[in-house]
Image (tube, rainbow, N blue to C red; front, side):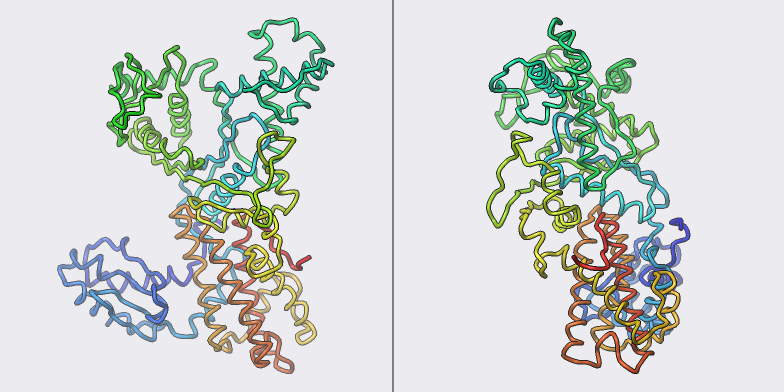
Length: 590
């Protein structure tokens, strides 16, 4: 199903109705600013709109007066039972009870496509994430950015964007030369030499031993007879290739794969795209030779009082202009990053999202300035910062890995607690909030463990279907067949307050998808799923105390069918949301 054929959900339907009511009262006004959303206080109704507030000026009316006029039209709508005007001109809508059952039928018809949006209009979006240096295995710090970026890409694709997932391989900096020297040490070790302790400044982890063994198998002792200038490129190429193979394997353990792996080295070897980018900017007077004044804060550590090549980033919103070449004539990291983002623009991406570690916050302004410059102001760059993860076990910090030498590897964490626990818990916090990841708590079978509680909701729904066949033997087992059968259920029987609350929660899902995609915030999906699962579990518990509220009612197949339709709506949305987060939706909890 394409984004263009996505079914209209309840909030978009009501938005169309509100705009249609407002249009004749505000001729020529920009209706795009009108929104319909859940009210902050649920006692105010089911939906609220800002129509009068944003259209009053163009309509030449006071917001309150325009609100009353719009409300008068909406009171004749066949889906609305009550319209209230509040405060300076907000309009609150209460819908007829039957509307929620109708929306459930929409869910049953759409299945996993429910919530899919045409918000993005197939706009191309480049999401770059992880981009860890190819100097070792992925560690738990990389894990959060990897999961966040992947879930964000899933969310944007579901919301109708044409998404490319990209990994930038930092294979041209000093760190890969350190990697090569570290691997060369392991190569000598593989040849039988006693290397002793790994010298300060080299990578100490055991993960480089296989690289040394591979080099020994490929070259024998030949490399030991060469000067460093000759062996280093050979060792570096093998080490980077093996590190990237390891990183791909680590990411696969989280079910993360990329469309593009882009090499930094490709920017400087051959055609020297970095130099070409600098000269292109110089031609527009956006690069010049000059001196930078001393920093205002008094920190002179990175300041050099010399004539140098500078990007005029202050002209694009940055605080100061930025160096593009070091004192030895080599390019700065920033220069390579400008050329890299220019390549994204050249490949047709004007909507760019980068996921960075929290320690790169000071780099955002200059990179956004660069994107403006290389795209002539046409492209936008949103940088999402991912805060640090503190790894705990029962509240105590986890010790580092011997294999990695200095950190706990991503693979160790996934192997211990499973992919689903890692992914959901990493997404159950906003990306810019610090995260404590407790290896013991994320596998607890309790309400306090969000991934368990949400997955248990899906498993509980599957269990209800299995048990229901005794009462309703004709209930199909397959998802599509069951949805089609339940679409005929008398959903008007869902009139209990708890049932209606769940129906309202389900109906929020498409709007939640659009809001989360627009804000680039996949954690909103995780929060929503927990709330939906909580309402489901609460309603099930009510049925233990009040038998007439149970999902399966003996000798009442019609009410049972209606409630099974509700369960189908719940598991359909839980399954969809979990898939966006890259988390499984089990039919049984083991």
